[in-house]
Amino acid sequence: MSEIIEVGSHWLAVREAEDSRARSQDLARSVRSLLPDGPIIVHDLGSGTGSMMRWLAPLLPGPQTWVLHDWNASLTERALDGELPRDLLDAPISVRSRIGELARLEGADLEGASLVTASALLDVLTAPEAHAIVDACIEVGAAALFSLSVTGEVELRPWDARDKLYEAAFNGHQRREVHGRRLLGRYGGPIVRGLFGRARWNVRTARTSWRLDDREPQLLADWFDGWVDAAEEQCPELRDECAGYREFRRGQLDRGELSAVVHHLDLLVWPR
Ligand SMILES: C[S@@+](CC[C@H](N)C(=O)[O-])C[C@H]1O[C@@H](n2cnc3c(N)ncnc32)[C@H](O)[C@@H]1O
Image (tube, rainbow, N blue to C red; front, side, top):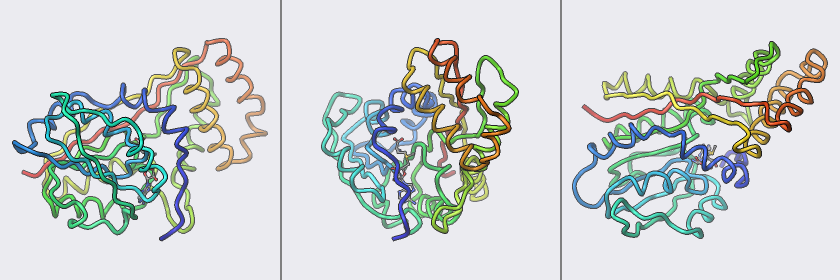
């Protein structure tokens, strides 16, 4: 197995409430009309600790079985250990996990799928992984909902000319090569949308946004620090060119004066 990029469960927990608020309810409602009657099986790809399941399971009818796919067993174990959500009619759901690399995903791994989901995944994939996922979905013919792929656009308020330099560097960092894996970054969502379009599947998109401000100062601070750290790792010269930027923004954040909109794309696809 190629080297795993560790995603911290702390970060997944800090962002979960905002992810839930931001994901497209409209697309989730449309999912319902695409499901077969009777028991459904949902395969959640790159499930992490199960945030997508906790958000979507209560919006869908049952009986529901979720299969959580991730290459990091310590994350899926947390999903199975924690309190499980209930379905639309408040009935319990059942959950199991499948540990493996999405690069090797095949139709057989999505056995019985009524729906495939993923959240915050497409931007951290490589091209072969994105192709494997699309091919597997097409093989099983189930609808798929891909929530919260970053588009690379960030709006900080109040405005500062240095924001754009950080945005460009952050977007470059998202496209970096990690242990031989070239990440898709902000192109992940559009590439997957294009692959399903080429297969003549129906495609619907929704622009979805994190809105971060002093209502959730910890999330704003964690997101901002991660954004600046990634940008400066990608372009170390920013530390000199934009000296004082981090401290200036942190001061605004501490005084409750900073807000950020982080744009994402949600994608719903289904066969014709
Ligand atoms: C940003 S996290 C999102 C987790 C979860 N969907 C959520 O919204 O909280 C991306 C997840 O995908 C998993 N992942 C990334 N690339 C993967 C790959 N190639 N194969 C399997 N899992 C992968 C990571 O371990 C991580 O749990």
